[in-house]
Amino acid sequence: MTAVCGLPWWTGLQRNDTIAYVNDILLAAVNGSSAIFAILGNLAIIVTIIKTPTLQKPSNILLCSLAFADLLTGVTAQPLFVVWRVFLQRAQKSCLHQILVFNVYHTFKYFAVGLSFVNIVLISFDRYYALSKPLEYIVKVTKSGTTKIAGLGCVIWLLMTILIVFFLPPLPGFIMLYIFGVLFLVVPPVNYMRLLFSLRRHNAQLRDEVTSQMSTIFQREKKKVTLNMCIVTGLLFATLLPIGSMEIFHKGYPRIHSILLPWSTTMTFIPPSTNPIIYFGRNKNMRNAFKSIMKI
Image (cartoon, rainbow, N blue to C red; front, side):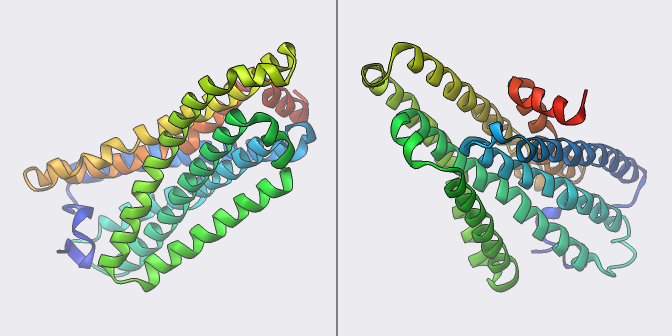
């Protein structure tokens, strides 16, 4: 089942009337400004961590990897989304380059958004390990090891994206994406739930192994980092809800679906531009390091 010009059916009904023009102009304005915030904000996070040795901890290395994925979204997926929407205005008159532009946009969206989820999953494992086995974490988890894991995750997801987009038939590709989607949505909450139960079990043990002052400082720092990542993860999941509800409008209200669908996609691009605000807003050391770099 396809829409005009051989585009997938779920892209919705394409029209080039006044409402569609106004809708796409607003979409371009929102996505353009959001992409700029995503690029500048995440670039600031990456530069701050790279330039500040005291911030180069395993948890911040994974945070830097997530910032890279968000930066990639602002550089590629969002601008290409706007370009694709512009091309859609011509779909009723000409199918020239429609499939090409859509495939380029969709490939970068798969990779950039998927890479964010890969990092969210890695961070959830890191937080679970850091708080459930803190002494073991300090000894075994290193900056170089964490960097290798983050890099390996990026390479594996790149290969998966290429396999799904360019080599697998539509149905197997959809099934594989569905499996990854379920894993991305289930694993982080499960890890954070395991963390809550583990904290209750190991609090007494931690007090026995380290001094009370060290225990308090260590736990406070790690819990704050974990809370920050829970906020980031929750925001990411919340922005997926609108696009998940679009099927309600597809058959019965195709016109409403065609207007709301691009906005639901835009919602998935919100976290890359808001995450840096969360990082800087809730991390005083990172704020001070950035001010020092900028000589503010």
